[in-house]
Image 1: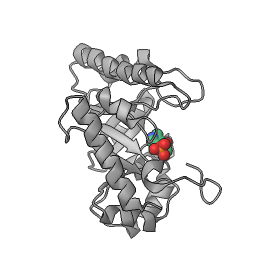
Image 2: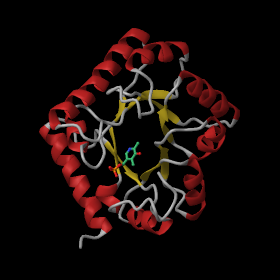
Image 3: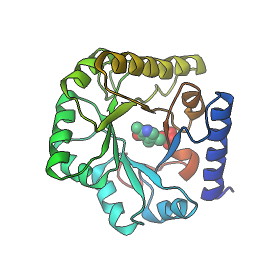
Image 4: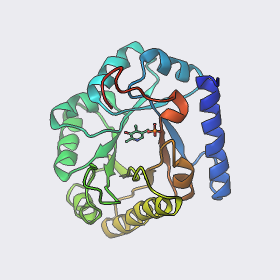
Length: 231
Ligand SMILES: *Cc1c(COP(=O)(O)O)cnc(C)c1O
């Protein structure tokens, strides 16, 4: 069986290949290792293998892990953020990927100022329009950015449909990139970051311009939701 550090090395190698194939610099995208449901010991092993950026879905789970892990880890909340968890998230996170309404964006900006923190923020967009998904509609993004000018906002994030074909995945990721280009041009807000791509589709996302990929199971292995809190 492959070790966690071998799987991490393999994901990094696949990222480099995909970036080279796309004519992009190999340092133009970052890997966020998604550690939801995995214990602190597993995260510590991946950290020892050189990985610094970790993603978690639930703020409560994140808050339990932060104090027992190396302080140089950069934490990325990537799951739906409840209003009453914003202060905790702002105090723990370097980035927040999952700002899914204009109200939440305003709240995060206000609380970040109160806490003297500057997390980098991404708007989550439901590109495919699935009813089961969080994220704002594509036609809400421009008004949201225009209404809340802030240097904290630095890009867009999406989760592709689970059952999509390769062609559909290219279309979803390209749509997020094109939306970013349009919104950035219309509002003057620089939005250089695109958080897209997971274990099953990160190479396609990199071909379409991802600057952050969120990879969980390809590094940590299969998630067992029954053993702990759901993601
Ligand atoms: C769980 C999760 C991931 C990682 O998924 P894998 O398929 O395990 O790589 C990425 N992004 C979000 C938003 C997630 O919830």
